[in-house]
Amino acid sequence: MASLLWFRSDLRLSDNPALSAAIARGEPVVPFFVLDDADAGAWAQGGASRWWLHGSLERLSKDLESRGSRLILRRGPAEAVLEALVAETKASAVFWNRRYEPWATKRDARIKEDLSLRGLSAQSFNAALLCEPWDISTRHGTPYRVFTPFRRALYSSELNPVDTAPPRYIPAPQTFPKSDDLASWRLRPKRPDWAGGLRKIWQPGEAGAVERLTLFLEGPLQAYHEKRDVPGVEGTSRLSAHLHFGEISPHRIVDAVRARTFSLTGNPTAHWSEVFLSEIAWREFSYHLLFHFPHLPVDPLRPEFARFPWADDQKALQSWQQGMTGYPIVDAGMRELWTTGWMHNRVRMIVASFLVKDLLLPWRLGEEWFWDTLVDADLANNAASWQWVAGCGADAAPYFRVFNPRLQSEKFDAHALYIKRWVPELAKLPNELIHAPWRAQPLELSNAGIVLGRNYPLPIIDHGYARSRALAAFKRINGTPG
Image 1 (tube, rainbow, N blue to C red):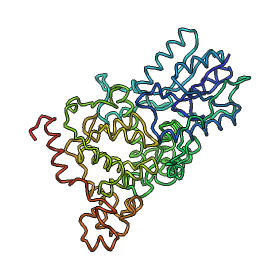
Image 2 (image 1 turned 90 degrees about the vertical axis):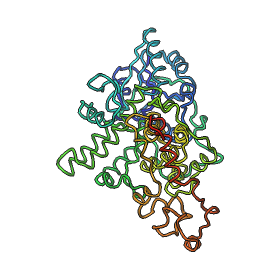
Image 3 (image 1 turned 120 degrees about the horizontal axis):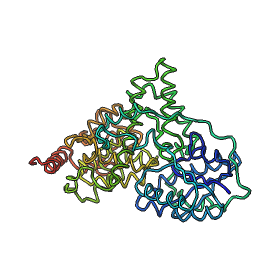
Image 4 (image 1 turned 180 degrees about the vertical axis):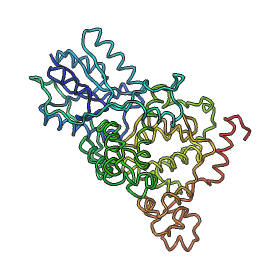
């Protein structure tokens, strides 16, 4: 007899309730991971996420081996894989931590019912969120659709304490079932190898998550409220991918931030730490929305947006994807994304606004591009964020909020550190011109080695015209004459 431990988006040994429960049962534990592209369908992991997954599984496997266990890898529909493992191990129980994607919740409900009918113990736990989506509701008993009251309800609820210590030993069976070789899954590119930028800055795995948290606590945290919107400096935590893959829990992050704040101020709360904790709450809010509105990734929450007059311009979409729009801050963000698998949050809002409001292209095109290129591609965050920018989601940005990329650039990248890093062909322009090179005089461009339209593009659309066009379209669907 054995207990099966199903790793999913919880690739860590610390603060892992399913792991703790499996060990407490007292039987040998068989940890396994399933690459379930078939179940995920259209939301199977994209290229950047698969790169990260390889590193995270590699690290988890080593961590398990150091505790007398090993990670079994299988590929295919999870229900079929699980049935085979139950038969091979003669398992009496299966433990896992919950996922909240619509396809996963339906599948897991079927699995739990089937296992229970067959006399097996099937137990699932919360390892990904501060609070279950169904445990918070408005005073009317309905899901929240506005962030601020949700945040207040979240942090006023009782949050479970964190047990951060990983087990020293995991009881193992006499023989483990067969496992796939991780390399055979080909999660990482070979030819062409586009992952050099990812390798340079990321360390997937639980140890990498803890190191990233420690660096944030000792550095950017105290200035987070001032520098989180400045993409040219290290002002954010960069924990998003570690959180998505469950290499660290939100409970641990919240506890660590409050403890650090207390050590510095004698109080567990401070303005700078509360601003950061609000970002954790946005993640929770996104999962709250996804659970209660499972169509979030594909359909607008505001139904009137189903008739929005989106454009169809493949050339403009390609310019946006390649970071060749002629707007330096937009291009810098898209190039950072392609190179590193990550983009600064302020710049994510700028490039998203440019796609849906300047170019009038459907938000789902941006959602799909981010899904394939982000190492932190997360169904709840990605869908909720794109709908927020597009104005069709919960607590959405007002339709008349159209980011001016030049003004955003001048405000948040005043010294052009970000632009000079990611759009180096503009680096010789003075700061007063680099945010809008089309405003430079021919001699100024020549002195900087720039020929607009040749080694850097002219703007693919005039922002003033684009803003007017977008406002007219948004007014029409909001019932106001354009």
